[in-house]
Length: 393
Image (cartoon, rainbow, N blue to C red; front, side, top):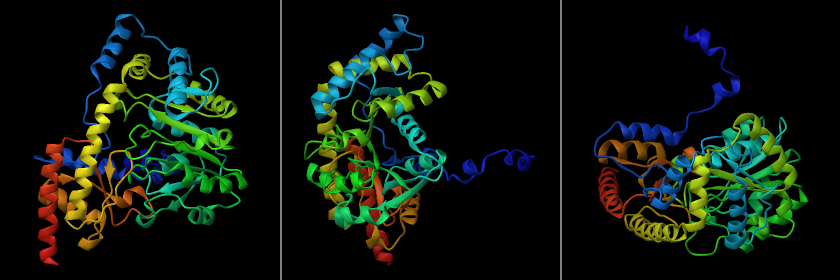
């Protein structure tokens, strides 16, 4: 019977691999006394004024659909926010669509631009959903591998090597999940002439833009000639601690946003109405809470990266997001072996680097979106683990 049912599943769906992040999260959830550094989710709860806005939305009877693109009031607020925070200009009327998380925005963007066989360059190590989203849209993901030597940034030489006549677009995420790498204005300008020369689109996932610690976040869309070929994706999950509200947005040239909106109309209708009212409050009054959480993440980053380097796990200083990406190559284990043994022996959950694609093997992703007390205990256990296995070697 199982074989009969299996035959109805498409080849594309059958060949998709389960998320490597989910595998470790599910395993850790079945064990006691586990400290999880595995999931990319703030440990802060959504600020209370945002929750109250959600309650008020219900009490006021906002339980129906909004416009397909989302509440105009919220799109206008996002337009102002992007202008004030990042010097970006997008029309609330025609260049912004509210989505069900940034994940839906990525899916919509790929489906709006990819024809069968188009190649999309994915900067890796990168978020696990990018390459499958390209495949599901009928495209071909092409890996652009980055390295610790380049602080996991895109270099001109590496980009040049993976562009072909079939390349349609490049997707990157800065600050990066999983490496925390950021790109400066000068570093982005160093690759834009290649993007223009080969007439590529850019999908810029800037969901961690607000969590940039040592420099001001700079969007590639600000560079002359790039706005008309950039699709910018962001949302409220990370900076505003609103992961469960599932609210993101996509901005870009009117023609592409129009295509995205058509697909959105036929698949999702609109983003949740209550979440949209919560996001409106977050943008209008959430700055102090955002800054408070950002200060805490920065403190945790500094502590964790220093600890990894002291125990012999070389770790670059991530410029943003809330992930450390230390090398475990000195232990002689693969990232899978390291993560599995660490979980079994010390009850600390991390994510093996290979699940994030090319260049990720030999590293582990550790989220520091957890309390400093939990991080201190996790460091103690990891240090014990590393010392014990070094003695066995």
